[in-house]
Picture 1: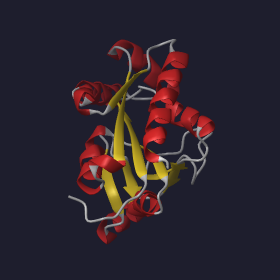
Picture 2: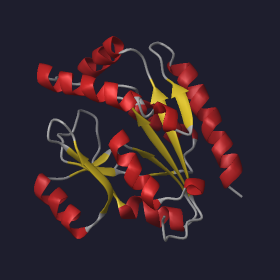
Picture 3: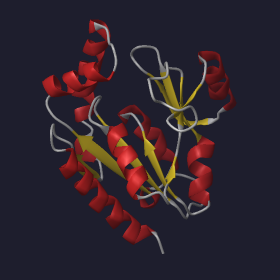
Picture 4: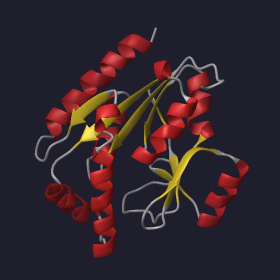
Length: 199
């Protein structure tokens, strides 16, 4: 159990690779600009259009390891391709202590660390459910070049991470060609959360 005194609330987006977590997070940023959007660190190469400090903090593997050693991360993972992703404690715990509503996108493997620190009454886990692997594979391949080996690892992750869906607090459906429906579902879900947690 956590020994922190939080007055804020953490909204966590999780979902399989290619489910549209990032696109939906950006939609929420536009609709609810008053929320605090935590930025994570990564060692992966920046994609076209990504901004350091907004989309991610892009750092070297050496810098990432130093922060692990310092205990600076709330959660971190090394992906199948060797890229590392992590959430700095300062990006989550400090805003929660100030009473802010924080939005964070994490991989399924990072949820357990969050659950161990942030009490259930201070967090909501939203799973973004998407289409079949064939459709997600197309989305992933359209986003950036990917090797067949990396694509197979993503497929295995897809199979594993779908198993997490029943343990989420809310499920939002983001099916191919139905982004408007997913946005509406998510907007309603977050409005409901804010109604309960914002005094």
